[in-house]
Length: 584
Ligand code: ADP
Ligand code: MG
Picture (cartoon, helix red, strand yellow):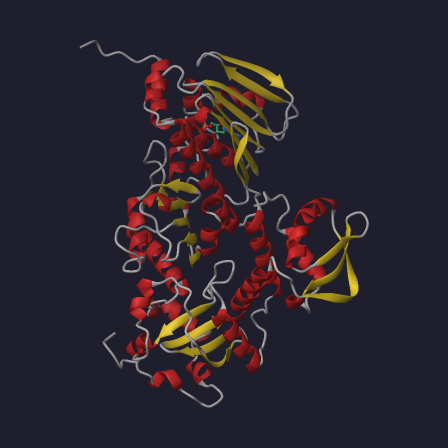
């Protein structure tokens, strides 16, 4: 054995770098985190050869002052942490001050940055992994970090990398997760000139889900919203009908940080217990927002794991949040007694929907399903597990509550139908079914002239053809001005200009999906606007027509945006609740 000696700085940095920078995606992760910490609203990532020959991240964040550029690449130099006590109240993604130093020690590295309060920017560069050159440079506020020839001086590490395809996938998965977590930031990922992902920063996570899972799955994802201040859980989980063979699509973010946590996954799995088959896993993207001092983020080299001060509380909240979403949205929600006896939930039900007098008091004073035994055709237990389906039994209209929900009786209990969501679904299917055929279109008595902003015109022109397919007759009427002569018959009564605005607004700066997906998106948006709203009193005939039309839909249980159109309370459950059957 040799004598004990202090390692050279170079070796020490490479050892440290080994912990943080394992592969190209670790570089991308650290750079994106820095851009987010710098409050960037646009982050653009470019890679070449799976990130081995080039990773470049450009942001429009606050930038780095000229005289701090060297510090940025110095180990243990950070603007995010002052003292050890801050470590327990971290509100930034980075805090150790070692990412840039680590990356720079294993690559050909350059950093261009201009601080928002300075007039000129600066550039520092290392060409051999050590020497740093520095110069002034004119550039917009923000930072550009370029990492070339990663691991050129640690060839052993290159050997441990997986195939280019796998490494590229890791990068694109990572960027996608960040895009989901930060929907207000515009992300762009380019691989050898090809754009892999581009988001528009409009804050709509469901739109980003479209990029990640495709429209079909994205639209079915169930929204989770859980608030027990100061604890918040938001995001999306798959309905029981959509599962995967592995846990790869189970994603958790805590305070904006993507983490791997086996215990959180099992809390999620518990929520799905008995609803999906053994060996299948749900898709989930959940964002936990907890007080910073509740989470110790300083326990893992790449900050991919955290420690909770009250783990049990977190797990039970994740389980409750997801279970609640599943039950609320499930085709045949099996409302468990736990759910029923959740005091908060009980209160909500008491205050709003669960008013027996209203629910049961139909025009004939008929107390129908309460006396009905669970003999009729359907076994709800089976249905829960069996189908996510499409099936809606024939429903008997009972009444409307809160001018928002329609109450109906089915063979196995009570159905509460959200009139807005249901109408959206009905209009949407009708519109989609009509596309491609002769469409009932209604001439307007006096054509409506609509003027758009310049950038809106560009968006609008692209959508014109689809609007014509749906049954609009629109002609150009001067610069940025259009004349609407006819609208789809089913939209009669709605201001055409409002519909045009709906079509244009949401697509500003959007990367537009092609073909059918685009038609469906536009149709869904128009139908959302056109559907009757909650709070609107409907006549008995209108309510009945709504139920009948919903029964005819192909996918009656969710609105085109994936929210449920109905909730089901089974006779079985009611019997238990009233102590007629089993014990509570
Ligand atoms: P940490 O993020 O842990 O502080 P880094 O090595 O990643 O450590 O970055 C060091 C410092 O450089 C940061 O604290 C920040 O002040 C600055 N910095 C790095 N990247 C950027 C960026 N994209 N925009 C603005 N400042 C940055
Ligand atoms: Mg950092």
